[in-house]
Image (cartoon, rainbow, N blue to C red; front, side, top):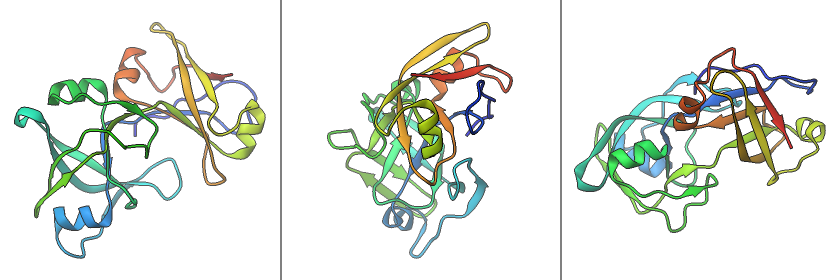
Length: 201
């Protein structure tokens, strides 16, 4: 979600850096509670990772003191757990205190109420700020000399140049080389399509 940024160096595949705006991943049970029995997510736009898509469906997230974020995009396909990913700025606006977590690690995280076109769904947990991370195919991991679970740095150039540490490496045969940072991080470096980006150990 966001514009790809060409990387540098002689990696086997071009580096893409995308800003991952606030969104949610839902189970089929949650989708049906929000949009009606038997409802299936409707793909609106394919994402960079194969098989992933932004759905036409959106929800409203209700935070503490009844503050809300509307038009929260659902990403598909459905998953085995419910997770909302926010930037810290989003969480502050809603009144949440959210932890920084690897995607899918939601134990002990806050929950909240989702509102859809046909109903409500109460999340017991699953609201997080996702760790910045890089998706890699094994050939990319071999080029950079890293393995899944390792940490890298992302050097970003331009007038707001900055280096992001603690970039989590995720490796899978299905992945294409792509970094995900959130809106707070993207805005901090004024990320643009021609901004230079480089992954380093």
